[in-house]
Amino acid sequence: MKNVNLTHHFLIAMPTMADSVFSKTLTYICEHNEQGALGIVINRPTDLTLFNLFKQLDIPQMDSLAESIPVLFGGPVQLDCGFVLHHPVGKWQSTLVVNKEVGLTTSLDILKAIANAEGPEQVLIAMGYAGWAAGQIEHELAQNAWLTVPASANVIFDMPSEERLPAAMQLLGITNYVNLSNEIGHA
Image (cartoon, rainbow, N blue to C red; front, side, top):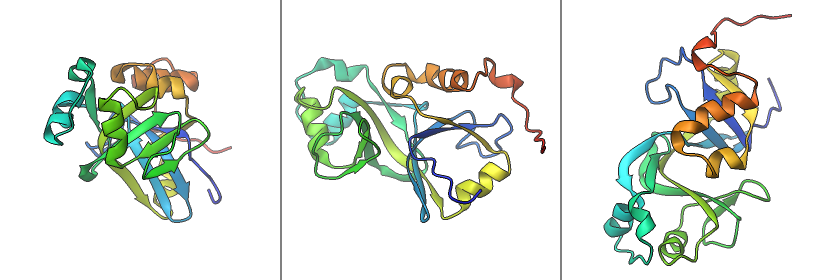
């Protein structure tokens, strides 16, 4: 499984995932290289809303829509840090360019722009991220812990969080999560 690059792919947790942190998750891989991988879980809303996040950060806001937008649990690493997946990429202080369409920004300037209705067209905001050391994600794939599929910006930005996992599975032609099997075969 050498030289696999899962940047801009979804990881679908298999139903037998023993780690409760990742059970029934859909993770978007923002970066994958020889040093490891970084992803954002995109289907785990928290009780925190964008409105309350702005309030905690003392960011004045113009848009009352923020009251209903949930902040997601992005993963177990750096839970005190915000991560904004967005389209278009734009020019923010601290952005990882995933591809031509998606960026991941961790700087406050993007949150201030969102609060002033001057941010990117599409955003997903999470606290924390998922990280893998070099070779770890490849090992987990070999253990059949995840399914992978090329990502779709539509799934990330245009669907409610509870619809994202089933939509990603449909990209693979799978219609029912419980029908997934942990058994693997080799030809």
